[in-house]
Image 1 (cartoon, one colour):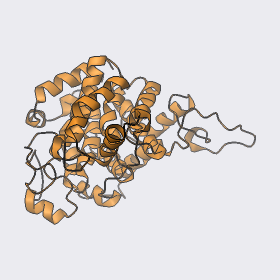
Image 2 (cartoon, rainbow, N blue to C red; image 1 turned 135 degrees about the vertical axis):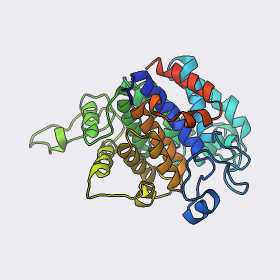
Image 3 (spheres, rainbow, N blue to C red; image 1 turned 90 degrees about the horizontal axis):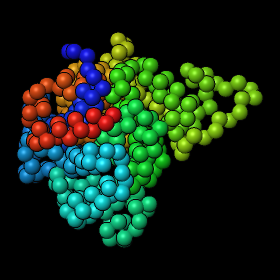
Image 4 (spheres, rainbow, N blue to C red; image 1 turned 180 degrees about the vertical axis):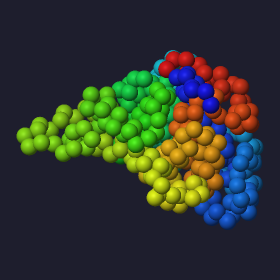
Length: 357
């Protein structure tokens, strides 16, 4: 594969996330892998229809879930405004999404509405609270799934990336640990769009951004996690997050992916190693592992994410963005691009954002 450009990597990250969402639409949330294989066979290799009695029933292969709908909404806002405009994004939620919801899980675009969005809907629509009070306590990756577009847009501006992602995250998820892990994922994605690889050196690069005040994490260690010397002052807090540990996780997963004495075979069993559930602390390690292991093989990365069952849609979205940023759009198989509904329009939208990176 030819080396990718900045714009190719940015486009690949955005389309990779959307492809991951659509690939998992049919087999979403099978916690019993025997049932998943009964309905979809031993290996899911393409877009599939959801079963009539499961999540997203009525949708068709290649379509997006509500996670994809929200990511697309964020992408449109970024493309049309040229930058992250929170007022514009909130207005889109109020006019385009919230009128389609009723506060129940099985409702809205994509046939399912996540916990954090349901809570934001209740607080904003039913209780008429200001946006500063709409964040709930869901410990999931739902904010990552839309703010990854912000990470792409500000890939070369880590401080702005962190500020915008934090601000958007707390609209729906108010927990600081969730927010810190969401920002950390965005910072990782930003470096990958720049052209860095998801490897054992990436966390050191992230920590240097902490030291220069570009990422809002508190750290007391010196370079390479060496302890502070007696008499060293407590470093000034450059932001709201107490610990930078979320920035260290990616390189540990990358180390596991290349260590010959650590084998997860087949790779889809990463969902069993790190956990099938929805929580962010299950999802991120699996996505980092798959994106590091298959850094130059987009199809293998996302298909192993999908075939692992459980909350495979979030896993595939996160893995798709990270791997797409490494392979570039030019490294995504054409059949996966063509099978995505409205592929041409989504590609144009991603290209518009990539042009501003």
